[in-house]
Image 1 (cartoon, rainbow, N blue to C red):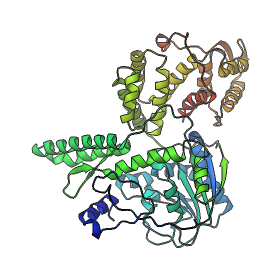
Image 2 (cartoon, rainbow, N blue to C red; image 1 turned 90 degrees about the vertical axis):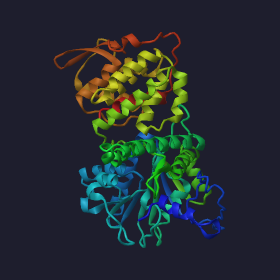
Image 3 (tube, helix red, strand yellow; image 1 turned 120 degrees about the vertical axis):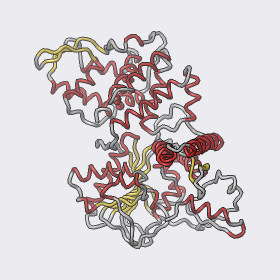
Length: 512
């Protein structure tokens, strides 16, 4: 099957008056050869009416909300087929693992329809399926963007569309309509689960010109490497391997703006640039505030029933410790490339971090308003080199942040009420109080491990332990390892409730 890039290449070989392109999700082209294409729009005079059940929540609840919605549909309609549209093979697998581990379905009842690349096949494993008819192959079917277009299904089913604020995982209005239109006999029901950005701390939007410049740098570098390797009798044998590995690295960071043409030359991938620009536009238009998507769908004629939800499920996508270490080292390298905070904020525009990395960078940018730049970056870089840096770095950021809070801050007052000085507590009481504190900040993931409970407690208080009894000694202590980096507290500002929650949640999530 030809890729869309290959199809566009054939399209451009024909003169303008002898070519035509049909699309249900038209976007503006950045390709200089296509920017002036004439456009004709066909639309209904009266939009088709249909009902959508919309479930929205903050980013930390998205995977749990999605999984609970799928379980609810499977339970309510056990004899029907279900289709889940989610442009993330690894995200699909995370949901499937939960369903299988909790006995909701058998392996044979689940299939994933996605691209046939080796990477996709390796991710989806035994659930990978190539569609060979116009009917869904299983009771529960997941589809990624490779199957959002280009095929029809002649049966009815329950559709759940998942739209997550992570680049390619976002669904535009047109994409939502397109996915719903795959069923030629009509949907039984349609549910959309999405998250929304709470408070963006800085703009990371890239312009068309900036993306084109990045693409040209990638093209020049790859062609130079290819030419140099091919001249060496030893390296020439490994040229394709080296270049494929580099392209895979670009793919894994969603930072690839090059393609390979028929002559095996690297060229700018304008379609990839278009995809990034579209993802940025869609995020701003539909997912910056809770009600944006609901209002847009209502304007299009849909009958929308919206619900705000915060799931208690913890659904995590598998990431090896090696991958995590690499992600943190990428952040450390980025932080160290700038001389000061102002330069750092300018440089962020050229980065393409994933969602987890962006969350860490946001926190660093906030803290660097208060800490000496060089020493803080050095400490971060040191922790990033650890084999498993996730928990250590999140603890560092959270502990620094808690230190910045003034004594009048609500969290500090709550901690002093729950854990008075000289109070003697058992592990069960400590666990109940820690989980109560987390719930006050909307963190509904129950902490059960004694080690994790004590880790959170030691962020709040210094303790002594005798047998099974823990005694509270001091509130909000600082470990010796970070004491040299503490700032003057004369100009510290209070923080809003949501920012406190995000820092604490980042540390709690690192336990997984």
